[in-house]
Amino acid sequence: MTGPGGSGAGRQRGRRLLVALKEVAQTFRWPTKLEWRIARRYLRSRRSSRTASLNTVISTGGVAVGVTALIVVLGVMNGLRNDLRERILVANPHLRVLTFGAGLRVDEWRKVLAEVRKQPGVVAAAPEVISQAGITAGQDYGEGVNLLGIDPDSGSGSVTSLPQSVIKGDLSFRTTKPGVDGGVLLGSRIANRLSVYVGDVVTLVPVTQAKVNPALGVAVPRFWKFEVTGLFETGMFQYDNQFVVVSRETAQRFTGLGEAVSGIAVRVDDPDRAPEIGEALQQRLGYPYRALSWQDQNSSLFSALELEKLAMGLIIFFIMVVAAFNIVGTLT
Image 1 (cartoon, helix red, strand yellow):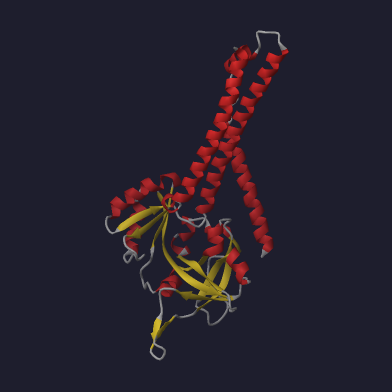
Image 2 (cartoon, one colour):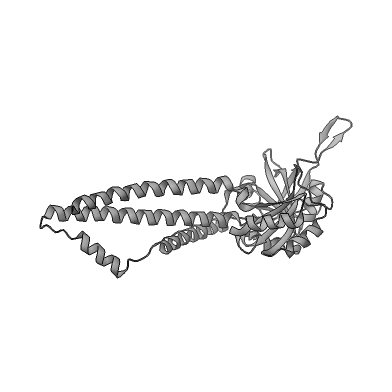
């Protein structure tokens, strides 16, 4: 399991480096002839003093280093933001159409899905089921995971790029072992911790469904057996470490939703316009539906990145100001 995952991680690091270099190249602009002429005019010392000339060179070098550092830092930060956005959107839709309230339940989802697909700017939409569960592979070790139910036949594969992140198996959820409740895809980190591979059987326990045993007088959950039909690696720790994927029909039975779903996953033509299209969808669908964009779901993360970018830019800017004062002092 380390072979495919290692090569995938290497390719992702290479893509991140290319994105950062591209951002730096786009930020840089070569000076014009007029700018070169003005620079030569004012940087040449009017005095023959070697000390003044040396001070000019040192001060100019300080400004050059400061400008270079500013361009590189801002370019890398922009590249980091874009790369982080791409990794978040691997398994996260641009928009989620949900209902108000604590419970995630959309009963008339076929009608809602048809209306969502009519909205300008929407590229693809599909139903999904979101829940939580416990998972174990037969040992004493178990942990909690986020369960995602998708329907590849109704467009889930077009909403996110999760199909491209599958490193073993596929999204068909076809099983080969008798007595299992369905197929499941595991994140690569979960699979490593549980020491399971494609073809192994894991046990999932829903956190919302439990029947009271009359003899014991306590709630006893049902244990679901799933065959591992695939592994995925997105490069995003949260997904690879906490998510398992099953078919929509299986997830509906697993969570007790019946024919309902948790929400509608939506892909738009421009991820940056997701909040705008989300507001239009809310107006179109009306109460009790609401639209949650990927920016809303990750607002704290991107706010921290913007704050860090601002702080680093200010620090380098003050370095450039000090160097600029040195030049002024040398030429006057």
